[in-house]
Length: 202
Image (cartoon, rainbow, N blue to C red; front, side, top):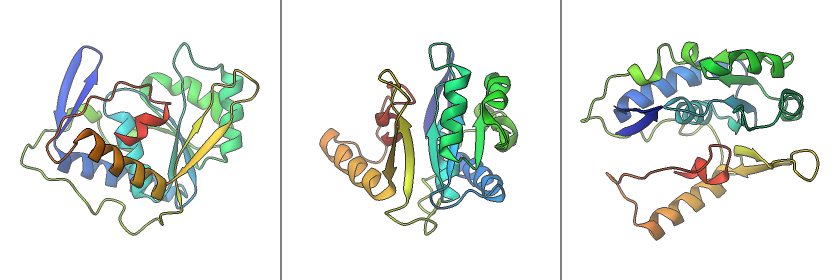
């Protein structure tokens, strides 16, 4: 079960529903050429959009680069430069960022998250009996393939990208779960910025 905040509202989504939505997104991203070591720029930061973008990208075999399209984030020129440097296969955005995502994408395909997943993500019905879906993305990427890419703020010049492999992410997440005592059925609050490295390991 996933609990997501959207403004002042909270909703729960069953793991089976998350898996179904992620597989739908993965099929669409795969059709755009997303696969091992192909990056997807992500302008989604709220509710279920961001985790769905991660899971869809991973299930397609690709890697995600979350970008800060918020009012305190970098300007359009800086974002356009990052998208170009990523050689992204697609730019996925949540509905409020449609105009800016299109302006920053250049010739890169732009995909609305609402269209990618077929419906408002938070409208998916919760099914508490659903279990996790361990097959999501299984066998489509190796441990040395990229998982995600985070960029520095660029305060000392151009933002610098840091690529993380799937193997490194898995080892880190496993170690953190042991250290923090996180197991099946645990509830974990992820409160870090979505463009910070810790956000991809919850």
